[in-house]
Figure 1 (tube, rainbow, N blue to C red):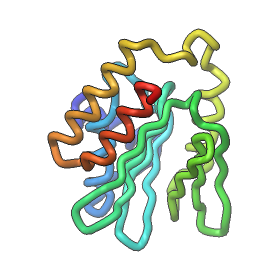
Figure 2 (cartoon, rainbow, N blue to C red):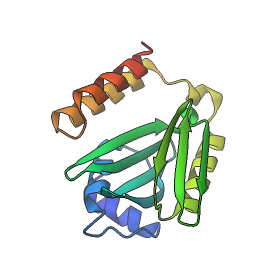
Figure 3 (cartoon, one colour):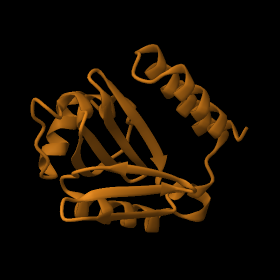
Figure 4 (cartoon, rainbow, N blue to C red):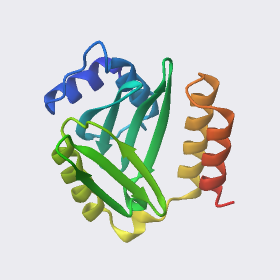
Length: 167
């Protein structure tokens, strides 16, 4: 999907892409797998700046600003999300992947994001929940491209590769 099409889909879901959150949405766009449909979109903010969250029918994608020029990129297959919630007066999103908890502060569209995760998880059939080796290879290639583009670190790549290979 081109970034222009991505931007239209995000705007159709009620999320504006502006000057401060655009880098986060660009980072998420680069992570998307071909053929996925965006079900929910939101922005997130922390002390380092703005990021972006996208939910598709298969995955949770997030780019959280961690420094002036870098993001912590996260891709979680919906079937791997063990719990998810939003709390606080200013919506804060917590996504659990086993014992690992990802937190996103000041989340725009948090209720829509939670609903999309819930609907996506309930739509996954047991046969779909077991990823094929080909899917893992494609994911590793995707993370390698992110590493080559300088979006993630070697350490991030090595962790994700080990996770995908079950090491």
